[in-house]
Length: 553
Image (tube, rainbow, N blue to C red; front, side, top):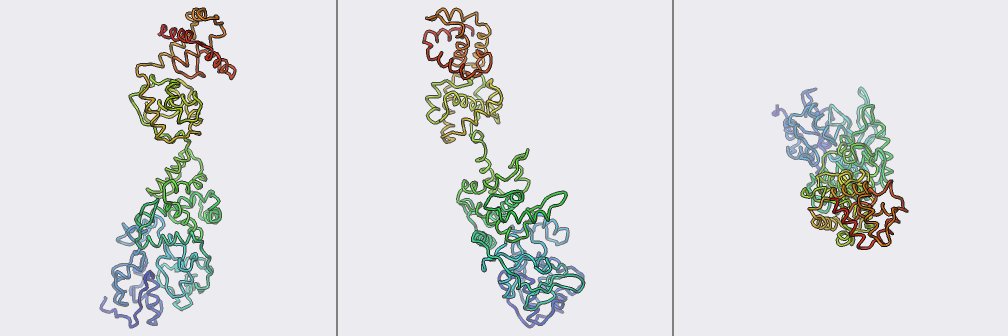
């Protein structure tokens, strides 16, 4: 079979980055062959389909014919196809060893795989060469002319070179006619060179240059460290997909212009069953795609994780609140990408209530009964108060709730409140009130919490003391008359609620609001009267109340 093939007389040099179909067209022109003649030399068996995947993964037979006809080496010919971008830079051809329509569908379902046709830079095309990189969705800008690529023919509306049967256009003239099929024996004759271009902003050009460097195997800086080109391209794609999905709904100010155009395209793609799948096929408009890639590149190449999270945060605010949460919304719409996951985690962590950001070490040796509702005032003032800006009662309650969280793995603020005898809503309410104004680092607070946990008396059962005080509150006749008569002047019956609340807060170290001394929720006046009672309570009276609790125990 190969013995009947003769080398063509005119030799043509393959330009680095040129597409194989462009090279073959130039070979045909140089040897005064028509496109039909050239196709017959490449595939002498009509209808064999050997040219179907010529730009994706050409067969060894086809590469051998090209070498015999043009003297172009097999490796050079393969580099003029999409194989140039194999090994996840950025394309993955695994499973495509035997090209077929079925395996190609599997390949394209991996996302951002070049489908039929190509983009073009009309200015670059004046040299007569089509570049293979123009087929990649990752490329939206021509760095040489600082302009966006043109995605489709303005005459026929199809992507350039949208030909299934043959990789070569029917007319190989210098006018670079589109050549897309319009019907039987009819082809688009609009010149590709006639298309106008739009200038690209510096951010899009910078991102495009980084993508081309990665395609060439040059590592890129991601979050302040060098990342392999494969990792950079995969992360860039995932982050761009995320921004497109967010922009389909809404976008921050810096993305409003291209997001508006993206939503128009999304409306055209949306079906009754689902919306656009940007992870499979990104926006066709190079301007939209280039802006999205530029935004993703800026986030990904931030010098620090905090910087990347700050850039992503305005986008995260536009993610809808769902029952599964924003993190699940993101995971369901983006390819797996470790760096993107880290940035998202940091961003969502920063957006959480400060109370959820505290990292507290679990201490299974600390039983709930050994934790008071509010830690002792002297312990709080000694170790915690200097690093907090909350009032004493609120801060002491918060520390106790934190200690309750340390007692059980994965315990929530609500569960911690219930464990200490509070109403469930007290836990998250206290945490929000305190941590909103925290003026300390997590390490500082963790150290203070460790100190308090070690200082608590493990032999004191605070739940038992609370039970004793409740009993005294229900049976005041067993102790209050004697205590009241021992005071000078004698205490009146109106002092009973305050005496019970003093035992509750000073002996049981419980919260004044939960005192059994109150018949109903204490008012501001009740609390003010209680503070006045405490200020006037002398040491002998305090000792008498402590003794009442100890006797009842």
